[in-house]
Amino acid sequence: MVTTITSFGRSGLYDWMVQRITAVVLLSYTVFMIGYLLFNPDLDYNQWKGLFEGTLMRIFSLLALLSLVAHAWIGMWSVSTDYIKATGARFLFQSVCGLLAFIYVVWGIQILWGI
Amino acid sequence: MLVSVYRYNPEVDDAPYMQDIHIDIPGGKDIMVLDLLQLLKEKDPTLVYRRSCREGVCGSDGMNMNGKNGLACITPLSEVVEGDKLVLRPLPGLPVIRDLVIDMSQFYKQYEKIKPYLINDTPAPAIERLQSPEERAELDGLYECILCACCSTACPSFWWNPDKFVGPSGLLQAYRFLADSRDTATRERLAELDDPFSVFRCHGIMNCVSVCPKGLNPTKAIGKIRNMLIQQAT
Image (cartoon, rainbow over all chains, first blue to last red; front, side):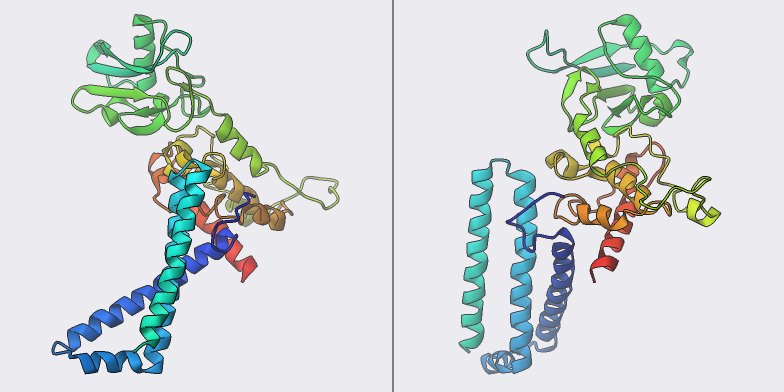
């Protein structure tokens, strides 16, 4: 058993499962957005605004945003533990990733609820 | 043909270098890489490599031949030589002791970690602990591993974290004991593997499968360990 305190869920199995589930969420969000844009070639501002005002779309968007952050954290953490050997540099990199993730969540919510 | 061999003797050399040796294969026969090494050693007796059984059973002569790991004794020249040239290097990722000989301590440490022996806390029966033919068949494709380290040293995840990631060979062995009907320590074994490194550093690129000289499939075994962890935890 290898001890880690900076990984997403401390358990490899948990991280693995979160990575897969968030991937499915992100894929469906991407497919939905591409589909919506393809089926609405003459999209105007009001229609776009209307789409994001709906409660279901807000739930879906927030779910996708949180999935993105969790997915990115697990991925970037893996990259950092593979390639950054100096503990200080690795922790700094992980801290920057964590801070960015938090900023993106707050910023994303602000945009979603600011409509 | 031209053979380029990795040479390093830490007592004499400041840094490793590649030595180019031109050699004629007697009778133009399709000999094994190990036989070629013997010919090279006759030319230059200072060349060092490990070998023992010369038939793919002991796992001593694992090395990197034209970029692919394998056992020199069961790899014919026709399989690896390209453009009449062969590049021989030690297995990648582990410290080199001399020439083609690597220090396998880290590899063995990972093997030791998975407790490669049967654990059974029930009273020993008067006769052997019997298995049905079906239970025995579960071990096929697992017990054949000869610990040559070709797979683990072909795995980038093992290169980056040889102290934390068990590696394909160790995990194949871990599943060999998880799958054994006579072993009662399944829960304890799984608990030891549920961290972000031991098993989950495997990203399924299957380098291990493509190089295994015994034709085994560590990626499949790792998938089965993961399934056992999921079954236990959900």
